[in-house]
Amino acid sequence: MNASRNSSSTSGSGSTGNSSGDGGSITGVNLYAKNFSISTSLTENQAYSRYQGVGSNYYYDCVRVAPTINGTYTFMTASSIDTYGYMYENSFLPAFPNINLLASDDSSAGNGQFALTLLLQPTDSYYLVITTYFPNVTG
Image (cartoon, rainbow, N blue to C red; front, side):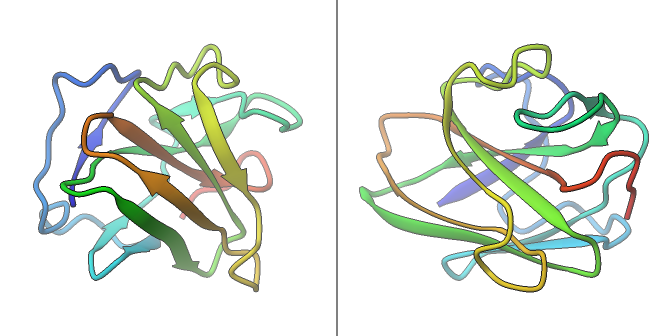
């Protein structure tokens, strides 16, 4: 599986990053996906109104996921903040957070951490959005 970070709305092009992580950013949220991990931090640089959220200041990070084989993948966080995860297919549009939404989770991993388990195919592009349960939270 390959993953890369996208800094705004995503459509499969213009991604940055590499499969070994994010080059040393401040760790706030750790994401684990089938023997793969990245560290990210949620800052005030990117905010949106998350699907099923209250308000508009949910800070987020978006990671492009490109599976190399058909399979079931689990994505989960390990953080001191209460996280919320969304998986999108083909694109993520922050202005329209319900479009292309495949799945979401709040705390299946326990302690306010999300866990998403999905069957993914290498023919599709996926976008994992990592955000928080409460608005105006950075970390």
